[in-house]
Length: 144
Image (cartoon, rainbow, N blue to C red; front, side, top):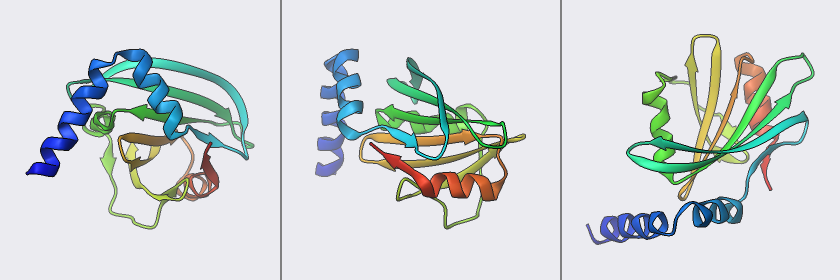
């Protein structure tokens, strides 16, 4: 109970600092990158998930087969609520990693996502890639 109170108190303290503090915190934790893909664009967004304002860094990459992938770094961890908000369905397949962290594999129609959490930062990798390609992308991804 005490740890839960401290955790939520720390999250409230971070939110009180405003967007600039959140953006700096996201940078301090590191951002998700795909080293084997060609960068296309980068954008920082403010979104609301799980009842909290989230700072979201989206990096778009072009893959060798012509498809695109998005590498997402978001804070606070309430961003993970997008799984249910956006109708992602987590799969019971294990063994996926995203930049060295155990990841959940989820699908929505033809799209697939790997999602991992490190502290108060959420990392996600989205693409229309097949399961094997997404697995390889997640394994080769890095936090810089």
